[in-house]
Image 1: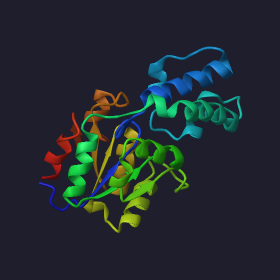
Image 2 (image 1 turned 180 degrees about the vertical axis):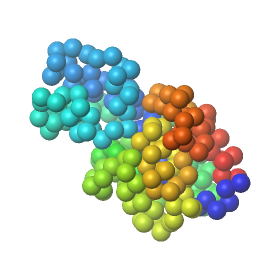
Image 3 (image 1 turned 120 degrees about the vertical axis):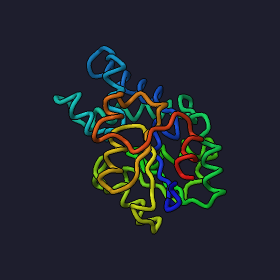
Length: 216
């Protein structure tokens, strides 16, 4: 059905890697440090996919965002390796895509150093032809620039690509870049109304191997 697709782009957090626990605990550490209490996890989950400084400005308007980011990143860095996991089926999916000669890119709002650290820890870095992180673009999801930057690196076109992600930031980025979007259903970030709304994804998948059916 999608024979024209030659490039598959993945988000990192919530798509390739289960980083929910390290992100949640990093936020709770930040709340405890700055406010003396933790927050409802549901409130934190709703921020998933946003650039970190953007969220800091919204949640801590009276605190220097750089100070808040430093608190968050210090905890995150010290606990990252212990609290992340690869989602089921992702390793096998990447291996199959590579064998089928798809170009594979990663498009994330995460810093490059922890992105590479996470991929290397689970032997996944070798599958990706290009990485675009928040260090690489001035504009971030849902702006199209991160995906367009990845396509330039891969010498690919929007109509040849699909973006796989777990948040409406991923879906919006894909839509704005003219790229087909696939939402993974193993995330906590998107409501049923958003999934089926006018700005929803082109496809929703329940497990990693389902992507192969879309690409057939």
